[in-house]
Amino acid sequence: MINGIINLKKAAGMTSHDAVFKLRKILQEKKIGHGGTLDPDVTGVLPIAVGKATRVLEFMTESGKVYEGEITLGYSTTTEDASGEVVKKTPVSSTLSEEDIDLAMREFVGQITQIPPMFSAVKVNGKKLYEYARAGEVVERPERQITIGEFYRTSSLIHEDDTVRFSFRVSCSKGTYVRTLSVDLGERLGFASHMSQLQRTASAGLDLSQSVTLEEIELLVAKNDLSFLLPIEFGLSDLEKVVIDEEAVTDIRHGRFIPIENEKKTVAAYYNDQVVAILEKRGDLYKPRKVLIS
Image 1: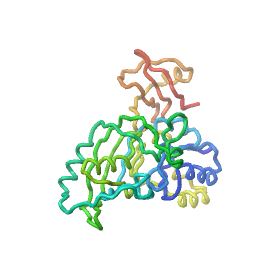
Image 2: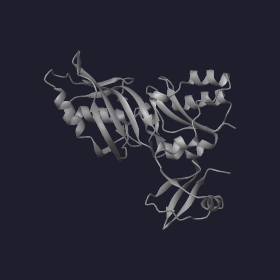
Image 3: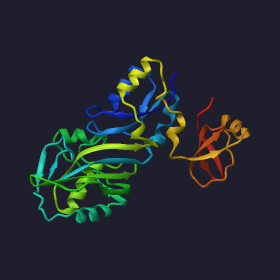
Image 4: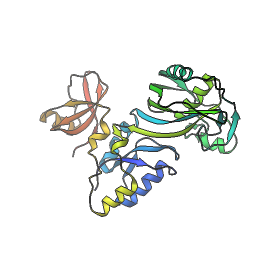
């Protein structure tokens, strides 16, 4: 059985499910899942868990993400990105300055409220929003609280045919729709807008610079080279690490509560530099939530 984390560099034009399906065929392994969905048009880091590592998927999806992309002011689309049909045009005047945009972007940093786009997988009354959207229906969507760590412009403004586009970088919490952030920024500036390009550069402690493509993985597997597999510990980089002794390892194996001096609700317990379990605080003690050793 193959176990580990893959820092996959997802290409444009495929869903996260497509990527998992292809990896199952390449690795001949059924137990594979992804940590955090990417839209088909979005490229970049897609954390993949294989074998035993699928047990830590929920902690990978909880982690923050970093994206780099492009926003276009001047028209909006049905999907809030470049793949949708144009729904509204607002020509951008040459008086719009970089300072105006920078000031507006800073106003989104911190905890903010977002309404998910109609073209998204969020469920309302048991049905995904994009199913309503494809049927031409608009339904009331639940607001969600998200956190923006940073949101700033990374290029000069490019004026073209009554539009202005520029590159940006954003670090954000789980559940953030960068498409919607792009549209909301445009509204703050008084223009229709959309996200014209996006790449995820970091997620679950994995960075784009160390990612591998499906094609690269296929070539390595053909040579019986599994060097692209990262230890399960990579999927837990956002959890606080606590070191335990051999006696505590025995207690954890038997499902017993153990004492640890820590204030975090959830921690990753290590013994001999190997993750042993995910522990959850219950009163003054910690209970094994997931035991990761046999």
